[in-house]
Image 1 (cartoon, one colour):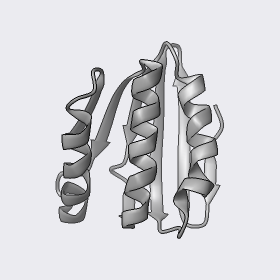
Image 2 (cartoon, helix red, strand yellow):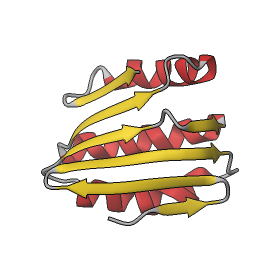
Image 3 (cartoon, helix red, strand yellow):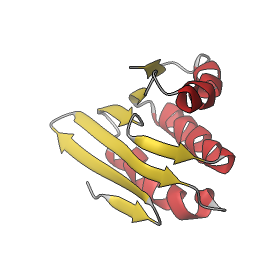
Image 4 (cartoon, helix red, strand yellow):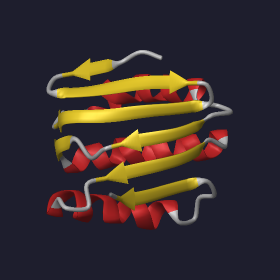
Length: 118
């Protein structure tokens, strides 16, 4: 599984057996993050089929509101693929709590997708 870098954002990916972890680091401030990120995230969806995926956003320093759309599309794709997914964010960061609160609400109706503050 490949890593990804775009502007000030790096996504590190590891796969060990049936466990996949992607860690978002830096800042996601692209004007059109869907165009920049979705091809990579689509490959993560494909490569994670049959695995358990952990998405670690705790190291994300900043994310603009446009980035939430990318994450919603990513979660929707993971749900359609049936990939059991845990999305972790930094519960001590006020901006992350606020941003991921919407994702928590959105994911409640999806089986196998959880969003948790750590």
